[in-house]
Image 1: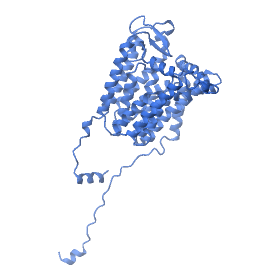
Image 2: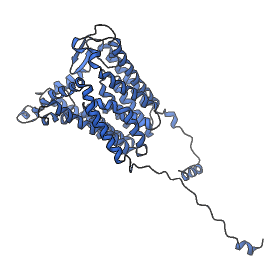
Image 3: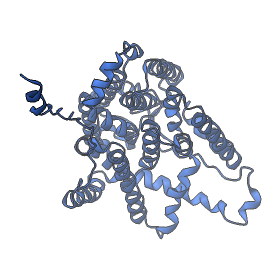
Image 4: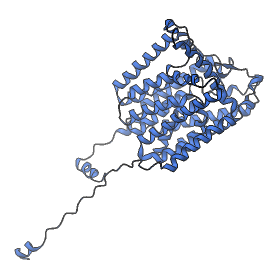
Length: 429
């Protein structure tokens, strides 16, 4: 072919490189209006139904809250002349005051007060789900399905307690830390002021080496304790003395086994049913040792990927819940945001374990009075104890799944990639 012919042939056109850009899937129309309405209707229905099924269970805590709330009068003059020295017995963390203070607006009606607390907690519960969907919009639908199926049964039991408030604060801290936002330390210190346990999530800051936020958490929590002690020294002592009792709380890890023997002595202690002098002196050190071993093991196993930090948060929280002297039903919701996220990331078995524990807790509380026969000081046999032991076994399964979801450190050791190969991978997303 001559030079002239070559000049006439058009140069080949280089095909454009098609890059598969990583596109996010924003919520946009999800949840749609009809679905949002359905979510509200379901919660309103459960809020009306559950107190009918469990009237005595749900009257107990609001009644106790009313008694405690009536001590808030010392906040008003001329009682300030007594502050800060100890003229009030207050065994609740400081941020419980706003919720308990709703009693002042109830007009003395237990029903109105219960509904007010329930409405605030429903907002907090829905706020947890909203924060998760905003933080991980690409998993919004999975989170909604998992939350509705596994969390709502136990959530319905918790709306009339105060635990969803601290769970909301802990969820905000989780989003801030894992999604590399700011203010994680401040959120954890706030959570400590509400229920103490969120300080355990400081382990995430340790793994991420966010020393400034960790310092904020520690100093903020210390300031809370100093202020609480200055306000009510005896209340702080009672708080910790109650959690180092020689008795066993009925639904704790060892308390369920303590129900098997006949003629178990059951008493009410600070609003909690306990097996009187049933081995708390040896159970406490064992539980704390188990908590230390599991927590340190999780921190050693953890690395910096988002999914691993979520699993770490869940494992630390569930360990603190399960290896505690007291395991009230509402404490299960503390781990709900982490369980929903880990399941949405692909570890669905954790949702099965958690959902089973949640549903079983709901149904055994319906028969709370017939099982324990608390007024007679006796219990009705092995069936109630078996259900508690099975529920705690399911929670142990949740803990195991969360620990397994934390990737070991050696998984980080990836061989250095060839620069050209890196460019090629970036071109395809």
